[in-house]
Image (cartoon, rainbow over the protein chains, first blue to last red):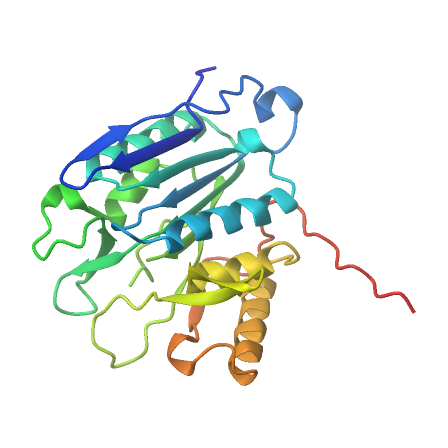
Amino acid sequence: MNNIPRWYSVQSHQWQVIPLLVLMLSGRVTVADTGKTQRLALLVAAPWEGETAMHNDLVAIYNALHQRGFAPEEFVILEGFLTRSVLLAFLHDVQRRVGSWQRGEVWFSLSGHGTLRGTTAAEAQPGLLLTNALHPSPEEQVWWEEVFATLQVPAAVQLTLLPDS
Amino acid sequence: MLAGRVPANVVALVMKAEPGAELACRARNYHFEHTGSPQERGVISYYAGQTLAQATTFAAWLQRIEALSRADFQGGRLPRFYQPSLQLLGHAVNRLPGEPVKAAVEPR
């Protein structure tokens, strides 16, 4: 079993973004080892500079899921000023973890900002906007179709999605 | 905007797209009272988190969210502009992950 980091924290300075991956809670015991339902909670907070709501949201959802019985080792958390590369790498790590599950539950809540491309409801593509720049670069946007394509949660695993963006 | 764009195994709690409304992202933040002080929160996450622990199914969760946000609006704690309009995508009758916390029983 791969030992995957459980808490990714991304920090930034005023003019540059310095990703800092911090390993916390490097649990080695998995739910598969204990015979319980396989489950994982992904909590992502993607604030813009100066925003605190996303962190507060993340803490509140963590506490609510903990009340429902989720153990600390069943959480993977990504928080900070994110880029497309960092977010997709995080989701890819999660995919490696859940991709072989025969059944189970994945929770995915994300607190951040939304964006759209397209001009009509029929063709509009929803996504995540990772910067408040007037003209965001491709590295500062992620589309939901890319999120699902990266996660590839197995069909027999229920994915609960709570996007606050 | 996610309606019709999620995989079959997804159950999602998302903003409801109003018919005829322009394309826009409408998730909002609001300062809710937290231990006596205002705390900035995403409106969806706030109500989702407040009601998640005790909900059994996704449908029951949404009902609790609607009831709580309506009570906050009627009690003057939430302006109408911020009141969330949400919908479930996927199987609303499914049980939420984990086990619901039983409400404390009031002593007689």
